[in-house]
Length: 244
Image (tube, rainbow, N blue to C red; front, side, top):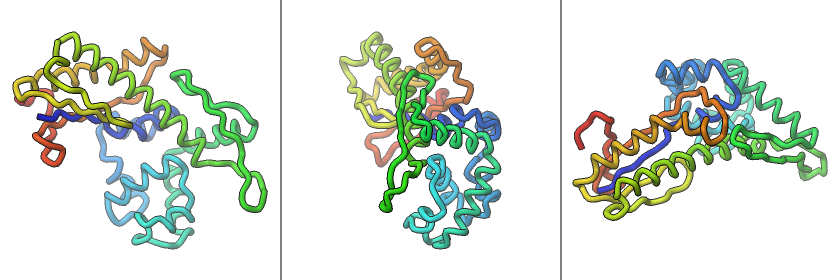
């Protein structure tokens, strides 16, 4: 059997954490459907479009980019339309907007961005095809989110591996390393329940482990999703209280 784990909305939650955006954090704390709220607020046609939009605009996509992106062209190919959606987005998530602008200032001054886990990113202005210097917005908004999220997932993975070995699960199961924010465990059906319990236990300890390892108090809730199935196509989401 396969047991899958995914750190839910890791990019968005990391962006909210790094920016301290109170609106984004409140939606997460209260368990609101951010994508549906944004569909209504930004007058988008579908929740799916709002979801894709959120995970693109975390990295400051321009109206022109959205208007020429196949995932959004069916909504509008007018850059002005998407510029207005962007305006509404940053009016709602004002602290995220301010954080992006602070990153732009660091880039323009030739200063590194320093993340809460100790990573540093030096992103410098680049020259366009005319030779003019410009700020690479999609780069310096991306690096701290992806880099910090990778450290959080790395910490989870190490915590799980230690418990996995301590319980002797590694002698019968295989931990399948994956990129980004997920992992899989291939195990006998008789051990599924123990693997699932171990994953949820690591999730419970994750914020405290961030504090212990990096000296940083992570405030935005983190959530893990566990699924079980005979193959990736047939995975079913499970709760910690489910019998598996």
